[in-house]
Structure formats: C-alpha cells, structure tokens
Image (cartoon, rainbow over all chains, first blue to last red; front, side, top):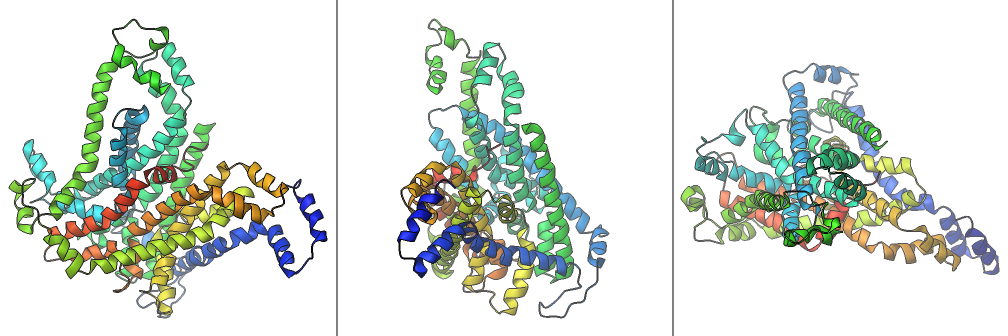
Length: 315
Length: 294
C-alpha cells in the first residue's frame, strides 16, 4: 500500500489543486473512517444508545406511559427479578431447556443429514430444495401451520398417531407438552440451517486423513468418530454458536402458537417472551429492562463459553 | 475423486482394482439406507408445508372432516377472502416496501463499512456492529418505543424501516466482510498503480467484483426483513402493518378461521420461497459465510 502512494502524490502537484482535488485527497487519506462512519453512526444511534438507555431504565421505576416521570431506584428491579421464582426463574429454565434440547437434536440430526448429503448423488438438487424451504419460511406462518397440524381434534399429528395406535396427545394445549411441541417446531425449521453449515464444513475438509484411515482399515464409524468429527469440531461449535444465539432469542413461533405470556399457564414463556410481555402488555419498562439486561448477560455468557471451547478444539 | 467414489457400486462383481479396495464393505446396504433416510428427511421437511397448502384449499367444513385429509374438492374461497376482503395486497406491499428499503439502505451503509473493516482490519469496530446479532430485539424495542412514541412516529414506515435495518445492517457487514476478505488485494493495488485513487479503485474495481457478494447479502437481508415479526408487532400501525402481523387477523379467542389462516400463511411464505428457489446458491453461501473459517 505505502508503495503505491508515491506515484500518486508525485502526479498531484502537476495538476491544478482546486477544492475538488483537495477534497478527493482528504477523502482518500481518511477513507478508512469515511467508509465506516455512516454505519458506525447508525449503530451508535440505534443500538448503543438504546442499549445504554435500557441499562438506565433498569435502574428506574419506569412504568405506565412512556411520558410519565421516572425515579431512580438503584438495583431494586434486579433484586425483585432475581428473587422472583414465579415468573423469572421458570422463564430462565424454559429458555435454557428450549435452547439446549433443540440444539442437541439439531446438531445430531444436522450432522446425520449433512453426512448423507456429503457425497454427490442423483436427485441431490431436490433434497437441497427441501432443506431450503423450512429455513426461509416466515416463522409466524410456520407457527400457524403447526398450530393446525398439532390441533388436538383436527390436526394431522394426532391422525398420524391414531394410525399406529397411539392415543391422541394435547400437544400445544397441554401444560406439560406445549414446550416440547414448540421445540419440535424449532427443530423442523432450523435443522436445515445446521445442515448447511456442517455441509460447508465437510466439503472444505481435506480427503487425505479419511483416505489414510481407510487404507489402514478403519471402518466408517471409526473414521467418523476419530477423523471426521474431531476435524469438524470447530465448525460444529460455530453452528452451535450461530444457532444458539437465535434459539435463546426465539419469539415468533412461541407468540404465534401460544400468544401473550407464553400461554395461560406461561407454559412456553421464555425470557424473551417474558420481557416482551412486561414491556408491551404491562408497560413495566423498569422491570423488563432489568430482565433484558440479565438475559443479555446470559447470552453473552453462553457465547463466551462456546468461543473458549472453540479456541480449545482449534488448537 | 467424487467420480471414483460413485462408480464402484455399478461394477462390484468386476475384478477390483487397487484403488477401489478402499471402499468399505456394505456399500450397497449403505446406499439403500441412504436413499431411505433421504426420503424420510424430505418427507419430514415438506409434509407440513404440503399440509398447510392443502388446508388453504379446503373449506372449513372439510378441514374439520378428518376423512377428507387428501381427497376434497379444492376451493379458492380462502384466497379470495384473504386477498380481497382482508386487503392483503396492502400488507404485501407494506412487507415488500419495508424489506426493500431497509435492505437498500443497509447495503449503502454496510458495504463501504465492511470494506473498511476488512481492509484495515478494524476488529473492534467490527465487533460492535456484529454485537447487534447477539442483542435481543426487545431490549432495543423499549427505548425505540420510548423515543418514537414521544416523537409521535410509531406506526410510520420510517420507524419500521430503521428497526429492520438493525437486523439487515449487521448481516450485510458480516457477509461482505468475509467476501472482501476473500477478494485479492492485488487487483486494487494494480489499479492504483495505473493511476486510480484508493476510493476510485474501490468504486471501479472492488465494487463491480462484489456484485455476487452484495446479491447474497441483499437477498438474505430481504428475507429476514420479510419474516421479521416482533418489530412490526410493536412499531407498525394500521396502515403500515406487515404480513406476519396481519396473519393474526385470522386468530381470535373465540374461534380460528383455519382455511383463511392457512391461506394467509401460504400467501406470506410463497413469495419468499419462490425467491429462495431462484437464489438458492446465494442463500446457502450467505448463511454459511465465515462458518468454516478457523
């Protein structure tokens, strides 16, 4: 880069240095910040500033109208939230259970499907289309679709169970089965995402270690567990990381299937649903901000743990 | 390599050359298993969508009749109901407009920023932008709602577009950064030797070479915006309602108009699926961007 500069500045003095050239020189010299500034400004105004405001609100008793006066109450909201075993802690539990179970299924299934797709075959195109469609479908519409399929009386799910002689299940309307049913929906929609990421990883692997193991007589399982999987670990963790962030924040399908507050018994109320309800159904801005800050910390913590893990396996 | 892997199955009885001996035993069994498994996967992924489509073509009476799961006389009544009586053309336009403008603005802001962050390795700035992928949307909605309702702007397109850019901009920066990272520096350098300024080299060399990357980022950002629900739920008004919010018109406490609801759900998803089918390559490369880097 520095090598490039001399000929250009050498050419400059020859030309008339009007205001345009001056501006051009200035712009080129400062292009790093000139290019980044608009986006940074946007991020600052629409993301950093609001986040700081949420932090501030979490320390106030803000509620009701957004125009109402608020009072600074220190960490009272945090104390209230962290001692709330009725809504907050169950919501934390559901958020972690939803994410953990959904991710476990998605990674295992995703790896299985990615391995099936790894080597080319006839009709591959059609399988790829099938994988793509759930992924791009609008989550709210997907929620509505499952609502019909899981309807206890007219849904296809119970018809299918009836065919193999299993009694009808309440699915979404059952207090114990609702969360599991929403996890199933998440698995349906997002396993394809994991497949795509893992497939990209598999395709970029070198064939040599696998070939060498094959020559040495390792069978398919041994090759997968001792060769492919260790090599794929960084990609697996990236998939978990990307998917995990979104799973923790799941909102659309929960709201579409169970409505406000995660159902009448809060059976699918995760942290995101809880915080949304506090903010926009009850206008408890102070408390909800405290919940959100704690939620944010949970997400960051999870990410940090996974990033550490990734560094460990990459070495 | 791949060709070699596929051929042996056809000629297993022929004398086995040395390089084919690597094939594990039970290849045929695996092939059968693989086909069966793939059929199951495809069924699992497509059957629910097919069910939604079928239900959207049924009358509510037929939907309640489990005997008419597959055999029924299709009707377009639900679609007429959705498109005409419920004014869905307005919501389709709203969704399209918000997605289009937020994507276009995010490309204008995001592409140069991604370029600067890639070329000058501004890791810390990049981290700030990428943080947006992690932040729960609700934690921004509260202050946004605070500010915009004080400005009496809630329910306007501008606010909706800004909120969708919160998703679009980081996405575009993320994808374009990994795209620029993979673009060789030499092209710009030789352009500068030939007398272009650095900005000129970016405009005339790098940008035209990045069209594929921008298409990837733009399509994904459009899809995410089209699918976005939470921001529109809070920030849209009667006139700016987008499709995902409009779906709820078919759900009430008393009863659900299943036929209408499924038709509405189909109307929301079909456009995005058609776009996805034609741009499959870009979507896959965008979703997996940066995933396989160390």
